[in-house]
Length: 289
Image (cartoon, rainbow, N blue to C red; front, side, top):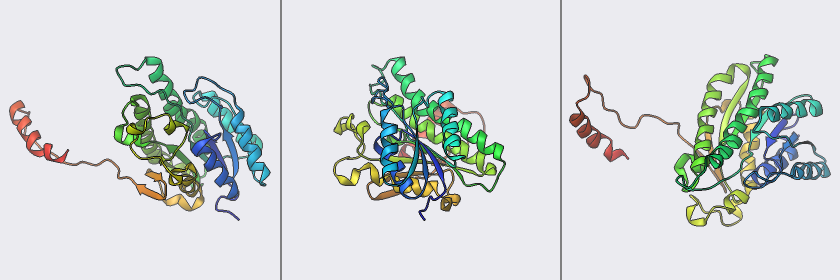
């Protein structure tokens, strides 16, 4: 019996990279997998749908259970069909892992509105499009003691601001705010929500010049398979205690990030005098940045 025996896990972006490794490990641990992947190119412009079916065959070849889903999860209809695929195949969905993504890298002064919107749509609206129907389904079940999970994917690009990725960084920081909101609002429905910030060599990081990467992606330690174990754990019933957290996973290192909290504070006694306020800000805040 694996850690995930009996669990049904829907994974977006499951056809390659980190999503594929998550699906394989979860299946090996006894989960039944809804493998969602539209089969898009890195920038989302070419769509084949093939990777999801390839993954299903790979899982089934070693005795696992999986079903493919190839609808566009950046649209609410794609999220609804993701849930329907899991219900039709396995009768339930216990866990949602939002791993799908694309890149349209440009400096902000060169970026088009379409390049901005495309990345925001897949990463941020894509999370909404899957979370909305899944959480509505879990709420309707009415079991506050359920062990349902939302596992979102953020990025160091959002946490620290990668050069040349303003659209991606904005979307990934937005995912953190979304995760916090879900964590605060869904516990009474038996749902926890956490975010993973992965560090691994994938086709997405391969497209980023090495001098712009926040972390090195060289060597086996950066294999995407090393991200899968923490996701499998969070997907399990053992992780019930974990909610509203951001965990960085790169190589053999796991890091729990702090939530934002006040760093320094200036308390006035009335309306600000601009010069006095400027002096206080420089004296109090400047040393803390």
